[in-house]
Length: 404
Image (cartoon, rainbow, N blue to C red; front, side, top):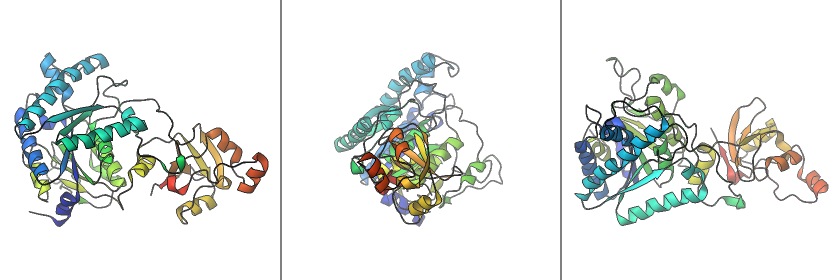
């Protein structure tokens, strides 16, 4: 049965970003199931025929490699995990390519790390590559580059980062920071979604959607739509991981929260249904739909507010907080009471109240050393002492994002 909300989600999306979990692609023996990949290709072909673009964020390389290498259980050390990923990835992309060739086009492989989203030039290269692949009619298949990740593949990476388009007011971005690992492909899929215009993120798992309790309990009910995000949704799920992959429902909700916070829509559904994508395309009421909160946020503001880890913080007084929150003003030096952390020009900095509550983030016009010399002073006082003041604002409003 068609649902007006679901119909609007599908029709308004220009690009479908489809995250496919390991268990969705696996048979009962945890080997890759070519028939499932063929069914996905059939549906992707129909989606493309209706004028949509498709990107697949696909797990499954380690599981495929384990089977090819004759491993009975998932390796626990990094070199053997990476060896399984390297072996399995070739097999995985080969199956996708064979399936898509039947419809007259090819699969294109992109293996990414978190640093590809932190570094501005690398981020732009990824985005430009995706758009060029769309021009050629290819279907991008994205996975994490496990073979070069420096952290344990099973170790969560707290918040991956990325750069974006040219930033206003000539604020420059500094080089990357430590860490190259996503926690899992749910997080990667959310970040890929941020790369694209008018996306719909579809997360395919092996459950019907989000339930209001344990899905194994017959009294639990499927939640059809989540119109307003509430962190209490995390109470609906446990902390266990899926059997074949690295993620679980908690991870999926974390990724979904990031997406809806910047205005993106997400559908969580059962990928074992070989027609699930067609049902979503037709606006049928399958899985759980999470609706984006507020207006869709420009890409560079999504990067500032919800993707990159702040390098420090400005603790401000109540007057500065009111000016930012209620009057839409920039952050001036006089409103800053304390500076924490070490950061450079153009890095993301938190804006907090005296009790430590973070309410905004922005790009600093000054490094931490220079900012220490300015805090609590009026512009006239700073000019008198230093003879110059490159920026009146510590953070300009155009480079500031409210978190609530």
